[in-house]
Length: 215
Ligand code: TYD
Image 1: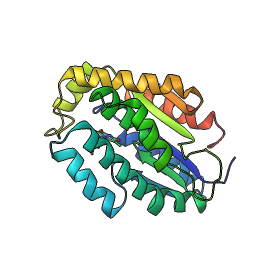
Image 2: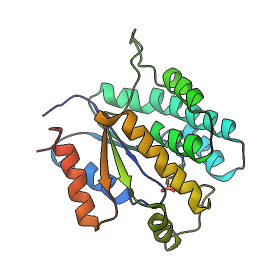
Image 3: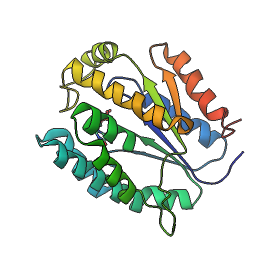
């Protein structure tokens, strides 16, 4: 089993039900003696959390939104993710760049090529000379049909800017995740989130155990 740093991101449309599983996975890693850093995007540092509040609550065009989520990501990588990985921690991050491709790209229609340029610049690895960029070692994608996610969300809370979007928006976002998975198959584990909590958890655990990261 690896003891080096591990970076795992969690993705899915709003209402897909990531949160409880992120917490459970943190417990599982801790039970194996690993140091776990839990974080989220946009956010994870004081500056990035301020940007999160703008992105989630203020109206803005797609480019402004894309620049803000990548600005938040840059700070998050520099201040929190890279130092944690360098110390050998398991970083569990609720959303990362795939969300920008899904929400700003597929959802809002922002240019995917420009998102790729931002991704290359923002995720450059400190001290690395090659073109390699920081990406999650594993991305757990909670795949749930948009109508089901919407009905789950309706039961829970007052919607933020994204959650208030119409169903078609989330269908596009889900399509964006599928595209990202197809382009990055090795890094993705697709979870059928239209199942009981226990069944979803078993899939999450299998994805991690299958890579030899938990016994
Ligand atoms: P979410 O992760 O669902 O947090 P909570 O459970 O507290 O609502 O909220 C983050 C929102 O931000 C979500 O609607 C997706 C959106 N988002 C983007 O649009 N682009 C991004 O790059 C990221 C990371 C998130």
